[in-house]
Length: 449
Image 1 (cartoon, rainbow, N blue to C red):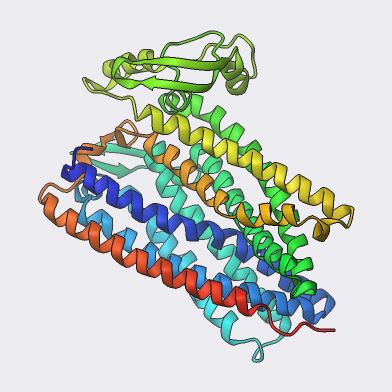
Image 2 (image 1 turned 120 degrees about the vertical axis):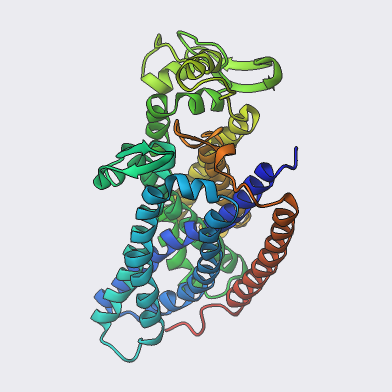
């Protein structure tokens, strides 16, 4: 890797954003599941649900706190390493970011404080309303952040004047077609992460034969969530990929390692990629598979990267517009492979649960517990495909990434800040894991009879 200011700034932002996204995903899904648990407590008055809410709420708060700390740092990146991007697109990009901070984040932060400290101070109905406010505002916050990102992926509602982007139609930011594909896939992924998180922790208790009443009920809630959300993640990802054929055809072609336009286009299962020579040294492919997946047709043509490169040169001028093909190709396959494994795992767990044989199959419980890192790997590879597939654009079709980096920041400064971020974030991660582990080992507490 060439350690220029540009590459170092990209590496730093990629590490920080990925780290933050791990905690965001769990926040989105777990907040909703906790709200559903408290709804059951409100409806039934069963104290077992209250114990579940308080237990999972502790783990939620640890996750939420780290997510907030790491999220605040991301805001400063735009002024530190990406000031040229801020100058170019700040008047548009800043709008959804400001809406997120002034509405969603403010409401979420206040509501979560009330929820934590008001169990015995307000009515059960009011307390239930507060946790739903937390859950909805968390997901509303993600909507605005993804609105900002969708502008970078598929810019709409703006004009370029005097070297800067100016908003023309503000409502276009929230009606951006890219936003709805991206938001649906992200929110559902958050629910999947939360479902498997609850399943994994509950599986640990079932294996240990402790806290059985709570863990059995929690496992069922996590299982239902995981089964439904994973199915929807897979299907939404399919439609999202079809949309990319229209919005970002280069990203689609790169993720499939398709160099030449083909009709029908094969789905490449495995490939040895030689990007320097614009070819695959070896590939194992399913004939017409990509045409079917992309256009629901056996004969539909799919544009290859070589043709798209020529079109982009004519449209945008000289340059190399093909992203890192190997990273996109394997990121997509890792994401899809994990998705189908998790779906299979949920189906098998559901079958054993219905047969009332789940606790008699410790191998399945161990597989569930040790599969917990996989949803995080899947969202990481998915996010890598989303962001790296846009390259070399920072704002697709409007601003190249190399043009958005700060001009006066020396490489030494980026090295120092990168080292500090990695050191501090590693410490924060270890502290979060230590606290979460202690909460899990202590368990939910005394279970009602």
